[in-house]
Length: 98
Image 1 (tube, rainbow, N blue to C red):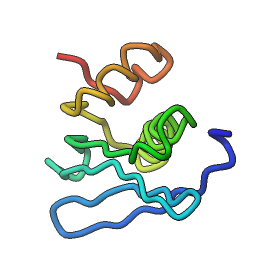
Image 2: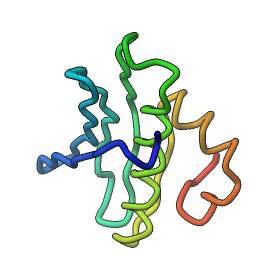
Image 3: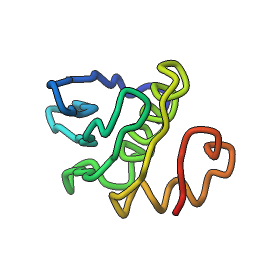
């Protein structure tokens, strides 16, 4: 199901969020832009109605793919994104671990 979730990106001057709307419920992964080459993912919210459906994982993967395409790195301050990044060693090219 992860590959079937449509995710959009909303940006403000200093950050933004990735948003997935599934069955009328909105999930998000928020980020701050530390520099043109670095974002900090600081929050992930998935409503209870969407838990266990891979929505959070889809948001994390989308952020990684967006970072690769955009040429920037991710600092995963959000506990969910940090846990996902530790499970996915193949993301090490864009995710900075401390």
